[in-house]
Image (tube, rainbow, N blue to C red):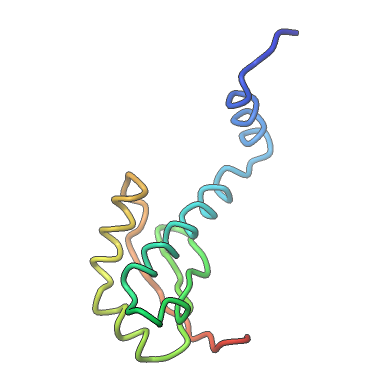
Length: 103
């Protein structure tokens, strides 16, 4: 048995385990949080965070209605910026969920 590059071994393991979508979703959630920090005013960067990604939809948890309103006004910019970072057309919709701090 010859030596294989680590990247090839990891790709094969991911494909065999069927976890490719979960890895992609985790990556998208991480990048989404970075874009949220860019869009939120200084001091409010902890008032929203990405909860999940599934079926072209990002779900964002917000602590107040004011934060939700602010992000809803920037929804198109958020989608465009995130898709630019991801290098594709992965995000089509944004869903908001009220999530008080500490819950």
